[in-house]
Image (cartoon, rainbow, N blue to C red; front, side, top):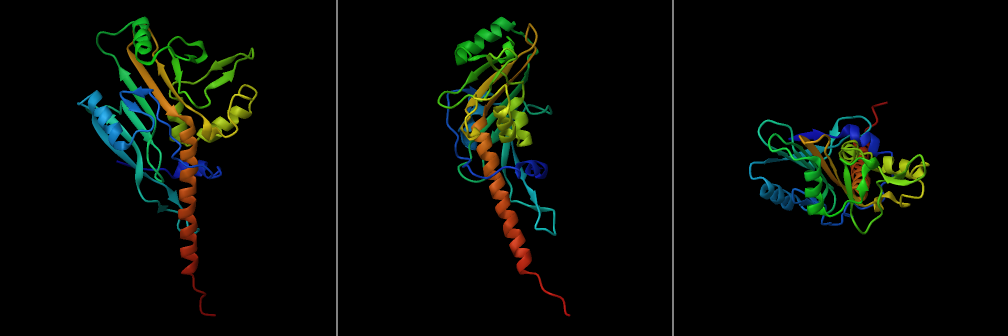
Length: 266
């Protein structure tokens, strides 16, 4: 499978390329055994161990760029993500990677699930999560069906102030995947840090943001749930690294085109 990321590049080119995408710290938080910082082989092995019935597909990507004349030039292919499927359904696991430059590692994991039989109560599901991960850092916006865990060692970037000025956790379901898909982590986190609700809660460089894990399970009993594990700082570093990589390809293409130019007979 292959995807074109030209629309993502348009947004990314607004950023200054300054950080290395290798800034991915391993943490014990995981989804189906997949942890931040794993290699492609390690992530694949973890998913296969979790469910041998999964069909795991690599999704390759390219960026579109221009030399000033041709606007459909493409970068070399690189691994964008792994998708785990069962049957003809959409992916129930999505594993996002850094790269293509540097040491390519997992920077995000998304899981979606439907519970068709033996549906647990919300209390049972919560107890199971606490048994696996320990007590959460809190509930997003106080929602008892969305606990959040924060990785140790880096600044939390999922906290804001509510209307009373109290610091709370605020991550919507699918938050990390949305930022990853739209290459908007730096833009969003910088904007949040500059806002009244986030001022003073973000690091000066949002590439220093830590990872978070969130589960979302509406209803009781639980018939569906989703889980997000994303390293926000590594996502920012990846955006910067990819911008620098494509800018270099574009600059080289412009120089090559210019060198081939010839003045017409006058």
